[in-house]
Image 1 (spheres, helix red, strand yellow):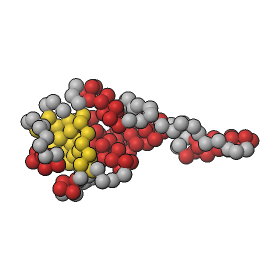
Image 2 (tube, helix red, strand yellow):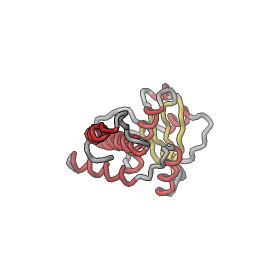
Image 3 (cartoon, one colour):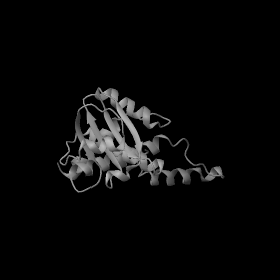
Image 4 (spheres, one colour):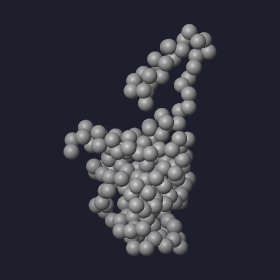
Length: 176
């Protein structure tokens, strides 16, 4: 696919997502899990032992586990989770298996069952990583627009039109 085709496909995927308002990441993942037929389990963990990873997707027959860095901002955590969801939704197959032992090190004592795939987020050099990163960025943009309650209003009502034009121009004029 060309880069514009990839961008359109990723944008269509993000547009199809049911995003709760007000935004709730767990509820969003519940909806995606229902749509896929297996739950998505979010696990905040210190990723230092992940060798530079800040996110990891571990897929099993019964659930998809998304590990994300617990020691970062909420916005960064959402971006990491959206990136991993991008891999899940695009059904990416890892080209480099990281090993299920890493997931067990990140969540000692957890029972995952047979691990089908482990995909870690540590590089942006291939097309799957590009797609996942694009999906994360587009999803963050959509979430921020959906949760914007009111447009700014001018103190002087005669300036409302000017403020509305500025808001439209900053939102790329597409009203989103």
